[in-house]
Length: 146
Image 1 (cartoon, one colour):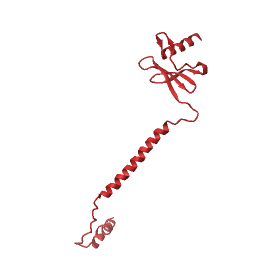
Image 2 (cartoon, one colour):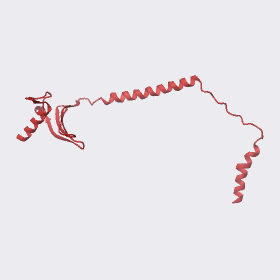
Image 3 (cartoon, helix red, strand yellow):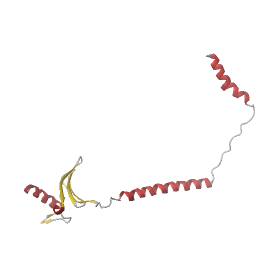
């Protein structure tokens, strides 16, 4: 084992030191100063990267609004709050209307209206109570009678 230590000292410690010339200075690398041209190149590069980033964000926003050909968009026709956290929502999807019950934990389809069963988009006028509430009451009466 001591032979290995001596061999390692000779190879890595003493051997490179014997070739060093005492008093000879190792030439130092010159420090390059940053010029205004360098700053201009960095600034232009940064502007190009930011332009590409904002172009991608703009493109993603535009592409998110594209829907498949032939499909119509969804829209909320009306809603009625039943409590602090519960709602009934009338949703128009194409030629169908969905009556949805919305709670914090789930969304349930209460009724699906198609064709002639669809409610009109204008509120029904039944005296002082008109609007979406009247539509929901009409649906509830229809279910109770049928």
